[in-house]
Image (cartoon, rainbow, N blue to C red):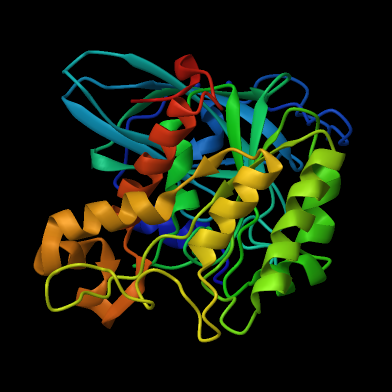
Length: 353
């Protein structure tokens, strides 16, 4: 886990035209002096914006565009994609808004703290920022993510979890609190106070909690795995939250006939535990919404075939058939977005399509 380095980002990010207004703290957090009103563009330089705010949930409104044609994306904190690349014609100004979760640690829960406050970075082919305002989000919906390295906010390129790319698909009013952590199983996630012991008390009535844990349950027997999933579901519901079970993304492990119908690809562990099947069973028995990401990613990878699917994973870089590239994580986050709409878990008006 690498510390978010503003100096490096500033040097690497293209200079952008900057013109905007301190964010208030989340209710229940201390509001520092100078942060009682909207924070703006005077906190930005050389394509990087830093806002000295405490942990909480913040609405960000940007006005994109400049005198020349531009194309701007916004990332923040630990490489989270917060706004997809947005083109603007010469002289055009385009307003966009999103809601962002600011926490410590800012990335993986067991990683270092990272930089305090809110850090945003302009990217895209020709970034241009005319104005920006950061304010406390008063009535934001929260989506918590419980998962492993295929979901988490990965600290360094070329890795990316789908949870890291999900925020760009959500409009202002919905934030993603990604508490996925590399290397975690249902056993370790429940047992670590930095993980479930931290997440559960934060869940408020109505919050969504998406749970995808399977990749590291290699030695977990079926009764234990089932019990652990049920404990997570019950824990969310005890807080008034809404659990959503998510089957794991497939591993890119082809058979000779071009299918992924094998234990490695479909997350069947060495004890014969079929993780996706158990997740589907628990979802049905407990009346929990299910995002069958195993089925969705299997269909996609098989449709792409052996060669084209390499770009979804990190095969070309590291011969890695488990972890996704930024491109792959973005595609998979889009599948999750589609399921959130289809299951009516998030109002369509709050989702970018």
